[in-house]
Amino acid sequence: MTSSITTDGIAGTGGDVGGPSGRPVKLDDPTTVTIIPELTVAYDATAVHTRLRERWGDMAPVELRPGARAWLVTGYRTIVAMARGQFPLTTATGAWSGHQREVSSADAPVLRPLAPADRPTVEHVDGKEHGRLRTPLDEVLGVIDDAEIARTARARCEELIDGFAGTGVADLVREYVTPMPYLTLGTFLGFDAAAAQRVFDVASLQAGGQGSAADVHEVSFLLTGQTAARRPDGEPTPAGRLAQHPSYENTGEAALGLLSLTAIAARGLQSWLAQTLYLALTDSRFAGRLAGGQLGIDEALDEVLWAAAPVTTLPPRIAVEDFLVGDKLVQAGDAILLAVGALGSDPSIRGEGSWDGSGSRAHLTFGIGAHACPAPHLARLIVRTAAETLLHRLAPELALRADELRWAPDFRFRLLEQLPVVFRPEQQSESEPYLS
Image (cartoon, rainbow, N blue to C red):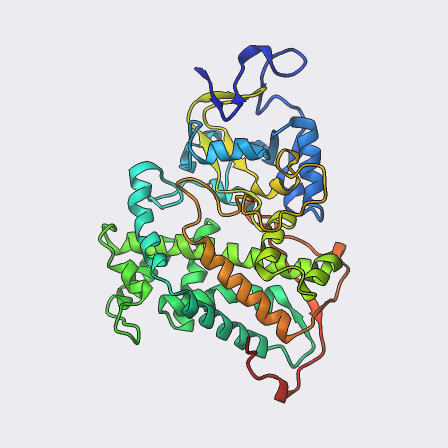
């Protein structure tokens, strides 16, 4: 059955639209489509988005790998409508038709976000079950003291910089961007460095489809040890709050909640920080405005979210029934990728001028609707602190040409594989902590 839905002016108009034959376009109709790896590793992702929009409009068929296709949605209003639940979609990736066609995801990293969850997790369920699993995360993140996490982030960032400041060379992705989230968040959650590293390692394995029940059990054990842990003020640690939250039916659910939080937080923070440093090192206009005080750090972070979006797509959605969007027929089981990374080039919201999006929070990087990021202000605070600390303490210059940089093949996040820099080595007397 095909339904026709009209949302905010987005209409499914039936058989009078479509290709030259007037028939709506189905996902498998085009013989050749753009492959997602071309987009994820492209030096100029905006050019790819623009080409797709010119050819297909706001929703383009793309190929994840041979035999596995998805709809890539690049239009602002359509993304908003879909993320708000105004179309028959689910985040339960087990409903993807690729599983019935035995399109394996085990050996294809690009398909791992579409792998079915073997147990309910907050990002893969909807409705009341999602609300139950989401509540502990909202409550734990809601009690975070901004000043404390800023101090924690600055201290951890200073320690990381100390490790390479005397050498004059560094790969900022490997030595700064990658470890920063687990050191910062791990400290705040109440774990020591070794335990925090293990939690983030397991979270990474789970996100990559390589985790095991034993890994989850190990994190459950770590959380159980946190139930009696207290902060200096006598309050339980955030990890302890999570372990004891009444919404969870057992410690295993709490462990999965922690792994979901840390996996998404780590990739999101790494991507946003790396893209901020990338723009500062490669865009003289951006760097000049930032250094000259014409662009405040928060406005600079907003510009990054528009001009060098760290999030490429939101978590995949799966159609649960057939419906029309313009001249496209979405069929039950089709995968849909909401390409928030394309919104900086969407002419319907950007116009034809040179607007860079500074000060606008309409970029949708943190999602919208029930599955939106639970703490975008904390992400901003951590990235702002990490970027300020590095750029105030060092004056790095890129050690490669910008077009020699490469991005990881990940359709969720835009993350550089490396960011090599050179700078004047610090002398021992210069390595005192930076004071703002």
